[in-house]
Each structure stands twice: as C-alpha cells, then as structure tokens.
Length: 606
Ligand code: BDP
Image (cartoon, rainbow, N blue to C red; front, side):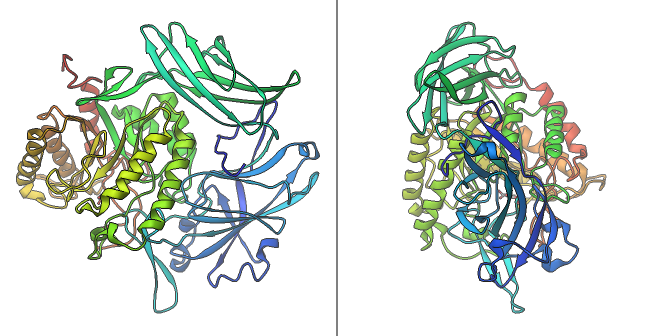
C-alpha cells in the first residue's frame, strides 16, 4: 500500500472516510516527543483544523514562525466489517516530513510536503473499537530537500526558516486525511494513452493489480452509456465518434476497472478521463492537433487563515476568476497542488503545467533577499537532493499522469543553469521523466532572468521554454520601463536568430501592486503601473511568433517571508489575497477574451 497513490474512492468494494476536522496539536521545540511517549497520546494540546497550515491561527510571533517538530493526534473508529480488508490512512499532504503512529506503533515515515502517501495500519489497528493516530511533523528546510532552504538558529535558541524561495513556509496537515479500506487483491495503478484517427479514438490502458485477477475495463460516456469494453490488464478501447477533451470545452468519460475472481467482483476503481493528445511541433503547442495559445497564471495555494491548507472554497473562487478573465491554463507554481484542483481543471478544460517543489536551486537568490556566493549544483548536497527530487517526480507523475488537464511537467523553478555543473543532473532527470510518463508529455523548467539564450547551459533540455522575466520591476523600472522593453526585445531577437524551434511561454512577469493605490501619471506599486507593465509585455509578445503563452505572476497576492522588498507578502497578484480584482484584471480580461484560442497558429486568423 505504501507506494499506492490512487485517489481515494468509495464504492461497493472500497471505503473512504474523511478524518478532516479538529485534531489535537502540540509544538515539540526540544524534540522530546518520542522519549515522552507522545506516540501513545498527546496532552496539553490545542485544537487545530485539518486541512490547514498551523501558522496563521496564532497571535504570537514565536508560534507563527515556529520551526521544528510538532504533533497532531485524533481518534478514529474502525468497523469490524473491515477485518478482511486492508486498512490505511491516506495523507493528501503533510508538510514537510511526517512519522505516523497508530495506537503507539510507528507505521511509516514520509518526506515531501506536497504529495500524498498512504500508511497501511492493519497490524496496529483495533477493529470494532476506538483507535488513535498520532502524527509527528517537521517543517525544517534543508538544501538537500524540496523546497530548498536552510534552517537557522537564532541567538535566543529559536529556529527560523530561511527559504531559498519567495513563499511563506506554511506547514501542517495542509490537505485532507482519509481512512481507507480496500480489498486485499486490488487495483494499485492504471494509465491511459490516446491515439486519434479521424472521428475515432483508441484509449490504450494498462491496469496494475497487486495480485493476479481477471481484469475488465469499460468506458462510459457522460450519460453513463458504455461506449467500449475490454478484458485483460492491458488493452485498447476503441471509441467511435470520440468526444474529445478540448481546452475550454472539457468532456470526460468514466473509466471503470474491475477485478474478478471465481465469478465475483473483488475490486472496482473508476476515474474520469479525457481523450486528448498533446504535442509540440515547431512553435506550436498542439492539443488534439490544434494550436493553443496559453493564457493564465502562475499561482499559489495560499489564502487567509488556512495558509497553504487546501480549501475547496478558495479553489472554486480561483477557477471562477480564471474563467471570468479568460484564462485557459496555469502553472502549479511551485509545487503540486491538491488533487481536487486537477479534477476541477479536468472538468473546466484548463491546462496545467505541473511543477515539482524544486524551487530555490540558486544560491544568488538564497534566503531570497540575502544571496550566497556559490553555484547551487556545486554543493555537496546535490547527490542526496537528486534522489529526493527524483522520488518527488516519480510520485508526481504517478499521481497526475491520467489527468487530461496536465499539459507538461515543470521539473524546476529557476535553477542555476549558468554553469555546466547542472548538466549531469538535468540529463538524468529529464530522461527519467520521459521514461516515467506514459503520455510522454513535454518536460520543461522556468528560466530565471539571468539564464538567457547566451548564458544558460540547459537549453537543450526543455520541450517548451518557460521564461520568468522582470524588466519594469526588478530592473529598468518606473520611468526606465522603455529601456526594459528594449532590453527584452534584444533578448528575444537573440532567440529569434538562433536555430531553436520550440515555443516560448512567459511563465512569470509583473510587478507588485497595492490594491487601491491610484496615481496619474502612474508610479510603481499603483494599479495604473501594473496595467502599463502588462501592456508593455503584451506588445512584445505580439511581436514574436514563437511566444505561445502568457502567464503573469501571480493570480493573487500571497504570503512570503518578511523582508524589505515585501509589504505583507508578494503583491504581484492580478487579484488581491481575498480574490478581488485590481484594475489590470479588467485590462487582461479584454485582451484574453479577444485573443483566439489558436492565436499565432499557422494559417489562423488573428
Ligand atoms: C520569481 C520566482 C517567484 C517569485 C517572483 C517575485 O519564481 O517565486 O515570487 O520571482 O519575485 O523569480 O515576485
């Protein structure tokens, strides 16, 4: 069960109960929990909502900024009828590392705060009785873990997070916890790939079960009508007149997998899939062979009170905002989001550039406002980091490979590619990613401002280039913005003159903007300046054929570490942190609704 990442479902063969709600919570600054028998139960606890980050509920700074070990606990009941099943706990995300104890027994450990894991608990659980789960978490940052950072100790003995990235190190049981019961012989994984042939499609599937069983697979359309059937753990489902999943016009089929033994159905797993192909040809991003111009955002899972705790209400509002503004895509910057976000994007016809939490791989930006003088890929932490990074990519692809919304894998945000030192690391990771993804989606990473056509040693790797560029904000700002535009055009002219024949998507650009600050003429931080900055970028985008997407930074304002460049967080949102529009959102809405989906496609009208 430990390696199984299928999204939990409840059906005739499976059970899935939510353990969300109030948990007991306690800090452990001296790391005495195990010696003091905390795995057997916590005393003197606070109440903490799950899913949620703990940080923003506290009114004292030491608690909000707390770094180290901390514990959660709650009771749960396991019915007697589950005795013949495998019982497990599934954590959709526990940030950043966790140890799971059930009734005092250590069940498993896990590292990585943005991907799910399951703990099989049969050996510890009491059937027909009350049980106790105790979770030890730790939120320290390290250079050989994701996301990368340091943990400092202040002279008063308190630990402090020193992220090499620009978002607050929110921690806790950030996503839902499930109590599961699944058959002992069961489906543990499945994948689908697609081939289109005129009006028809072939869905090639592979089902992995943990033990031998007869497998049947069927595909139902949105009305529940069975359109194709097959037997065996791998096979083809032929769909006549296939209804394709299109950008902005999603259509989902239901794939129903069953395992049979001695005439009985011993497991059932179903999931929604979308028939669509993805390809990159020259400058074109092709979905079902049709060119798509991306428009959307870099985002964060970030909101008031819950921090990085996943909140369906916030996600629902964010999707409504994206629809309103005319977005068709986003990047899950800078980590994989909750699985429900992908299900919602599948339904909405939104494309996702799916990013692993490999952010902070650049010492010049380390501790965000400080900066350390060393090439990141020269560090003695690199081998250990690679193993952890690969592990995260494996889990990401296993978790997300069947979502039609997932367009590409983003393997890093702004790594330091200024020296050849990065090449062996990139070579291994890009190859592993291609091997892991049955759909062979494009692989990419974002290039920081310093990593240009001239300076980067990693341009051979991506299938799509993602550029993060900040002229008009971090350099050539204010009245100098015209020089910022000229510099950006100089850089793009170099790409245009090169032999690189791949699409470029602008994956970050923008400027901090204080909602409500109006100035005529504009000044930086005013709503007018944000609009002028976006207008400048858009003029540039419209001048180059190879630019095939625009994703300004960020959908909404978000929380970061304190610093002299941040006023209560990063304010580059087109929307405020409570998801209301700044003036530039109305400007972008007009542009994005006017642009055809296939903007710049060969032979397309614009
Ligand atoms: C980029 C980072 C992003 C930051 C952004 C900024 O990728 O995480 O939030 O800069 O400074 O370099 O706003």
